[in-house]
Structure formats: C-alpha cells, structure tokens
Length: 330
Image (cartoon, rainbow, N blue to C red; front, top):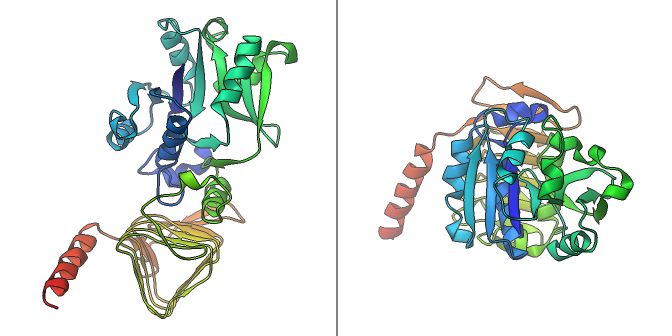
C-alpha cells in the first residue's frame, strides 16, 4: 500500500524553534523525528513513501535522500503553502492505481501496528483513523483513494474526521506516541525515550549506556567530576566540563558544550549550543541563543553569548585535530 508522509514542516505554535529547520528535523534523542517515523514504517513493512514537503524542504531532502539507507524508495512532492497539503494529496491520488493509502505525519509518531490498521480497513473498506487515548486524531490512518478524492478540495486535513459520521469510518486507538508539535511534546518525547517508555528499536544505536539510564554517545567528553542523575542522554562530540550536574531528564544533543558548575535538569539542549559557567537550567529548551521556558511556554532570545549561545562548527573540527595530535604523541 502506498504511504503518504506529511512533512510540510511548519507550526506557528513552535515558530521560534523553526528558524533554521522544519518540524520533521526537530530531534528526539539526537535523531530527527522524521527518521524515527521512517524507521517505524520500514519495520512495519513499508517500502515506498511519498513525502509532501514545503517549509525548508531542501533540508528534508538533503537529510533523507532517496531512502536507500533504509531500503525504502522516497519521492518528494513540494508545495508552496505548508498549511494546506490536502489539495496536493487529492491531485496525486487521482493518478494512483492504488485503492487506498496510509497517511502518516512527520512530526508525530504513534504506537501502531500496520497489520491492525490494514485489517480494520479490509474488513470495512471505510476510512480508518488512528486516535490517541486522549480522543484526538493523530493524523495517521488508512483511506480509500476514491473517498478522499470525492471530498471538497477545501477540506482541512487536520479536521478530516469531521468529514465522516460514525458509520462512515472506523477508529483504532494508540496509547503512546512521540510528538514535536509543541514545546511540551518535544520535551516529553525526549523524556519518554531516555526513560525507555518507548520501543527499544527506536533508540539511537550509536549511544552507549554507561550505566542504567545514562546514555553517552560517541566521542562525548564528560569530566570525571560531573554528576549524572539518570535518565540522561549526552550526544556525539559534546563536552561537559568539571563539576557540572546533568539530570534527571536531561537530553543534550550533539556538539554542545556545558561549562563548569552548570546544572541541567528536565531540559533539552539542542545541537551546537553553549551553556555558560555556573548556570542552572531547569524545565527549559535551549537552542543556541534561544531559551524556552516550558512551564510558561514562552521564549527569550539571549544576546549575551557568555550565558548561552551558538558554537561555531569549526570549533569541533579544531577539537578533533587536537584529539588526533594528542593520540599520536602518546
């Protein structure tokens, strides 16, 4: 069955985090959520994915390529307006020979069994919606091509269930999911992952579990005096300097520097961010010089690079050169 993945890449609710990336490239434990989605689809036997892209679409295409590394074929369909993908789906569907297709989202991954969705569809030949335990549509489901084509082209894809009565569709329930659709969802998704409350197969294979609940990635440098309170994840090429305290529920993405005596808990530190000496970061998302307060769901741009800021990528290349020099001079 054909799979259509909506990766249009923009949500106004989290716009400050989308300055230089689309939603699908927001990360859950140092891996873009769209990659988690593709891997989950591949595990369910999907081998062809049509991706609808819009906001910063070249970054999605550059990251995923043609899908060969997952053994799946990926086609891209760019659209101008990220908030209205429905018309494009209808246009594409008119060309398909398939009777039905699986609709998926790049910024939300529910727990699901494709076989269960497919059986629900084959038994009824009606649209099958995958709903969360909070009675909200996840944006995932199986749809007859003709049914979708016959809907008004002004239909809102996020309100698709409203187009059908209870007798015109079927519902399957999902009791767990990862999402980056809000600041809280992004933080909670990372916490779920490092707390092992999701499928083990989704966890990045390059991370090494130093001890239960403490994950350290390749070439991360953590000073022996650092206190780690699980669950904690530290990404590739990070530096955590003396007397810092990391955790609980802290995720530090790749290429970050956490300076001396800093404390980070219940927070997400995005790639190439710097946390200054002696700072206390709690219930926050830090993305370079952007600070998001999770309880208040507000954001602030910090102009003083001494506190938090962006690290130039060249600094990590310089560090690698120094590492190689020190290795060969031992």
